[in-house]
Image 1 (cartoon, one colour):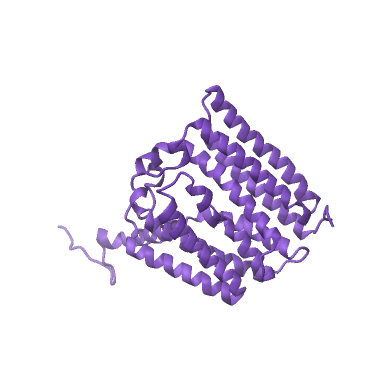
Image 2 (cartoon, rainbow, N blue to C red):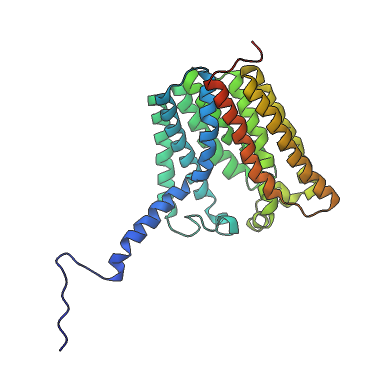
Length: 317
């Protein structure tokens, strides 16, 4: 004889209820993914060294943490609003098809509110914990990235990442101003390093995924130009990047100078090898340059951080 099924008090059962934890987790991860955490890593790699250079020989941990938190809010807000604006092309491109809005994990309207909340929060946080200049620089960065790069340049010109990349250079300006309340030539030099580094870094990735960009109607340089033309530009901007790192040498010590020279020679070798391979008609691996460009930037700025904290004797002055 079959006994009647019993349930414990408070037990609801059913597949819909049991799916709630998974659904909530998926939604939370979706919101986190909107902020593009891996992109935010650039914030950590460049902001901390900029602040340490500005306060050479001393470390204000509370100020650094407050600035990083405000910068992470700003970067997360800008990246989220970028996802909102690019939701249509993210669905087309294989590389971005897994993003939250492309998979409808998060409603587009909710993502917009989330992005605005992070952006506004970053302004007031930086104003409260650092100074008004840093807050204004963060707000200008968000506005430039979303309004100028994403909405104006990205789908209209092959030079989109050249000028749009200026937004990615702003963390060093924010970090420097948080310490000094001003913008010195050293901050402008660090800005130039990232500004010139961005095109070869991004174009190397775009060479790998140019069919994705072509399908989405985004005129990245590798989509509208030959590989020979693209790699020539990569070499030019790599030289400009290395030159910018050397321009900062007067503000640093021998450790930074040594790493800037050695890492610069390595980065230039990678860029020239890529261009030479294209000229010979050999199969090339642009993704290798993309990945190593991250290592190059990290090496240069980490050396700057160590050089500033010790602090090592300056080569000039």
